[in-house]
Image (cartoon, rainbow, N blue to C red):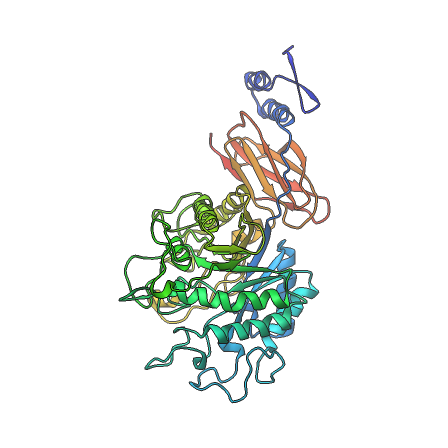
Length: 498
């Protein structure tokens, strides 16, 4: 007999010899027996992470009937979603949004002013609360024209008033604080589609406009909801070189400029940085899209920050905190909340989509990448449904086609695997039962593309549904996991070629 090895209170035969013996005998049964021995040799590692699963689909929810909103909330719960992110669009809620003149007597901080239109947001937030979903509200531009800088043509993104934005933020928080514990301060301010100008002949502008919005909104959020998390940033993952009102700024440059630090992280004290005050922040909201590429692929530009760049991103944050350019309201080790993420598919988008199978695979890999980053506290799916198709050519796909469901209701492959992602990376087996709490999971194997699966390991997930273990010497073939306690489910099948 092989010499015994004792580990983790198990006494098992030497696993490598056991595997060799199984292979020598041949046949699936022998290989499975060897793998079972290896699984026992490497019990599950169950660090209980606190990462949430969130979802966002404003186009589906805002403006819909209460019955339709309620149906979508039930769908979210069935998919294992923990939190809903929804936008409080300033110009959709404030009165006289196309007027250059502020309504007479209107106090933006007064949530009870009858000129505010809260109807659609009330429907969404109350439904989320009834269905047991936590809620994040993004308080964001576009602005009513009367709260923007003067331009020849009305522009709801142009130099929004910080004072008026702070007042609107106060009204939103006072109305929804009983139901909301996360607040996002604006949306993608490093993109010209949300804030203008991004830059002009004198330099970068948007980071300084955004800093003013944060200084105006953050203290009001904390005054009326002191235990909540105020997310600063909400940045897009990439930008471009060049200057212009709409030319997007790379996120790490945006953070540094917002903090009034130059490329060497030395303080800037002139111009827009005169009288600089540290930027208050509880955590960073971020949209780490990695278009077309696997989620583990680092960004080409050192100033971008996709989902595989979490160390790069936290490195910049930590440096700005040490320099006291950012003022954390909680821990100095700022957490990351990935509040928007997804992959567009072809079909329907032939210009910016990956295949349906690739979307399914990449979303699972992204969940694993986020789990491996201990400071990532949330990963969002944008959206449930594909966007509308209007116009022709590239313009026909202006809305994101990153849903789990086609716009006419047919489910994509990613819909089926969303409640239970599964990744085999080297010798590590990782999965997440998103339907909550602890589950007993059976990991199964078969050698070929057809035939019966056999159980090779059984593990109990963490309290949040995660499991992870290593299987040295794992064999080529097909793997999946199943669970039957509580709501049952089966992960997608992962093919391992070597």
